[in-house]
Length: 420
Image (cartoon, rainbow, N blue to C red):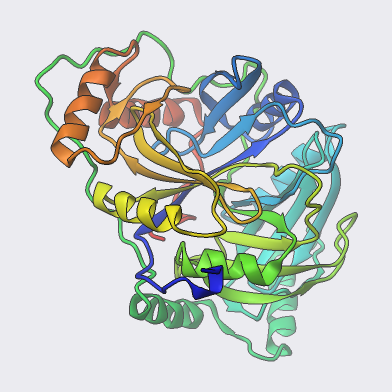
């Protein structure tokens, strides 16, 4: 059976959760993302037989980690990450970030672009990995679209120029109209996932000790962090059509736009395909042409929250029978019940059911999904209870929110919705 022969099943109930990259110099990137972009390290440790660092970072208290740095990928080849995408609330926040980046000697290729649907600042981190920070506009025009953006202009002048450009673009509409259309379509196609109940025993009969540590420490040299919220990710692919088919038919992501993005700074013109399951987000995942298949993937994890253990088991069966998916790795992290698998081009995807517990990461035990829910939750609860640093996940989230608010490093809230 080929991939195109696979039966079309109901899309899994998943939500975009977080993104992780394989990199070379974790220490330098940790310094940049915490000192300049305001992330806080929620946990860190060693993996790959205790030879390389893995760093979990967040600015969003509902997510233990939004962004992961995993060492061990030599910089012999350029990164296969297309971009790590963030949102900002307004143009002043974008200007503030631009000033921070221009003061960093290891940041390069800073370019401001008007995409019609958003105003975007692109830059490359100290390892040359591309990042984008965008401010949404009130427009929708087919993507890719790209015009120069001069952030030295006033807000009114920038908005007026964008209004004119969008009015002259075929297929232009308002952002609200686009979202309304996509919401109806995604509901009809069963792509829309609302947040579900957490899995596990919400009231365990054992104490809830709090580790005597700061959950979200701030970089000692960090200044006022930029107002940003993590929003999407992108990675390079070799076979665009095959990868679109996989992310659509297996993971339920809809193509919202596709075309050639013109060259921007040092980034050459490439084909972009935008994918989303959230009608409020034009794209949550971007597939970018130009993947060198001789280079190992820089995607450490594209993590999707899945709603129930039964849904996880259904996906386990579908993935194990898929001809283009490699071996599955099934892990209980204490914080989640997870399946990891490589997509057809070797990018690691995680499907994770969130538990009601927290234990320090990295942590993992072999997950046996043949157990019943009662057996699995009982085993996991006992396992978590015996792990140093245990606490209830709700308590972790509450404490993390308190800390992030107190230290001023909580992400700009309200920019990214909690549906997929």
